[in-house]
Image (tube, rainbow, N blue to C red):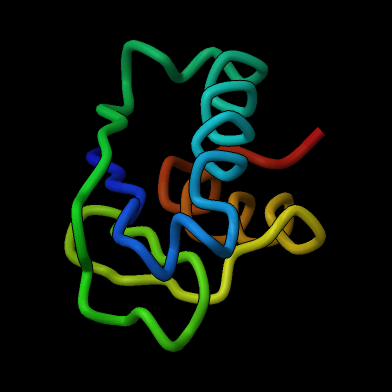
Length: 85
């Protein structure tokens, strides 16, 4: 699985680096650091929708600290056949 976190100017201002750190921590927590390729993207074209990520070919928008766990569970763990702890 490949995950790209947008770090364009709008997403940067809305907390993309917080999302990257949350993503790294979640990948470590679930033992997925060898399974998931995490990278930064300069723009995913969804700047008005908040921090955006691309999970394989699906773009997910509106990430923030408050909804990260739910989105991670639905967009990453579910696709890998894992359940949240």
